[in-house]
Amino acid sequence: MPLAHRSASRIVSLARTRPHLLPSLSTPSTQRHIHLEGFGDLVTSTANAISSIHSSAGIPWWATIPLVGVAINVVWRYPAMRYACYVQNKQVELEPLVTAWRNRHEQNAILFHKPPEVDPEEPGRGHWKDIEERSKLIWTRDTARILRLTRKSRRRIYKNFGAQGWKKLPTFLSAVPLIVVSEALRRLCGAPITWISHWSGLASTDAQPGALLDTSGLFDQTLEQGGCLWFVDLTAMDPYYILPAICSAMLAKSAWGRFSRAQIMELLGRGHKKGGMFTGHFSPMSRGFMRASLVIPMLPLLAADLPSAIFLYWVTSLSLNVVNDNLLRKSLPARPSKLTLSRARINDFVFLKCPKN
Image (tube, rainbow, N blue to C red; front, top):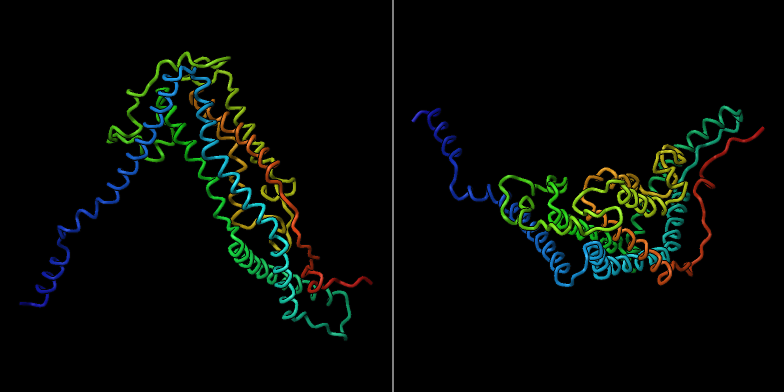
């Protein structure tokens, strides 16, 4: 058999599709469809539970929706926030120990630092300026190394004392009930598909009965007269934008109120820099997350066309969040650490100032 014919037959045999590999190609989409269907079933069950509370207890809708928020807060949000506050207080108590390790890293950098040599035969001011510029470069390099070693020491200390940062994750997971209940209320109000459904893929045309596209069986007409005050129709948007404005104000208080003026200026890019680096309060990774949190209060205003029932639930959740903060501030106050330490700065030893004539 010619060599070219054998090579061609080998390529054709390798290019043949193997039957046992075909099911694996459709496995990811099948798994994703199962996950979305499970999420849709969870939303459906939540909507049925909320509707049954209203019908069985005879509570009006304007009181049923806040009661759902109170139940979720008691069962999940407050315990998660309390544990996160406990971990945060422990991290604050360990901060002097972290500072001690940072000072040790600074002292090691000072011991192994070789300052620029000063030529006694050239005592001119221009020569000192050159030495000062070289000292700035050395200070920037050593500072970056000290920050890296300090972060590593902080992670080790938190791990040894059981105060790892990931233990505060349940607080962020409280957004899951918020999304589920919001989607359940959307289905009860018969509102159009939201951006959450489009983003998660639940609004596809081939969705199964458990998906969020089918809202005909969950629409509750009693919501049209279940409100109070200026939002009588809970299936319609707030005509005066009062509920979205309240949500934005509460989010701004919780998101912006925890930052000082110096921290906000740093997040806006106006913080003090030295050697091309921020000398502020955040690491590069946390600075990105904190900057994203500055625009969170604008989200309710962007979604002001949602039904009033959803905003009523959001106002309840945000109000309870403020109550939780006040309770935790009184029950678990931040205690000053028993460790005291005087701080030493590397630039006091390394940075060479230009002499004044």
